[in-house]
Image (cartoon, rainbow, N blue to C red; front, side, top):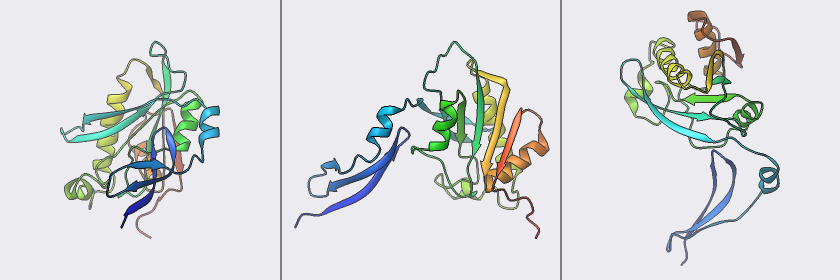
Length: 193
């Protein structure tokens, strides 16, 4: 009997479609092209995967999305995006809101600080009983790494996030004034009640 699996597949530049893989041959085929018209009508920025060191040398993964008309000789404002959870993660998938911001001319950068899933229990559990400081240090190391690039205007960097990302946005603006703007979305503000 032929065995196959149907699944949704996406990446940083494609919001995704249905695919089928025949398990006996390994052959994969795209079944749908739901967003083809939209993608032909829009220019999307590039997404670069980066590994960097946190303040204590801990290896961390992040991504930098540049505007569609990116010119490395120019300087761009930037936005740090922070995911919810905290036990969620960014990856090689399509984030429409990031592409929207990049389309407006921002460099968008995002990472999986400690507390995120996908890097082992020690990485995920590092924020237990320290719900802010460890992730803050990782996010500041990431911001240092990105703002050191010549095309990022370090004086025009914003920070935003939703849910736990909103909590971290609140934490950040309570601990540093390095960001020119902050938008907290769907945030947790009070962990006591």
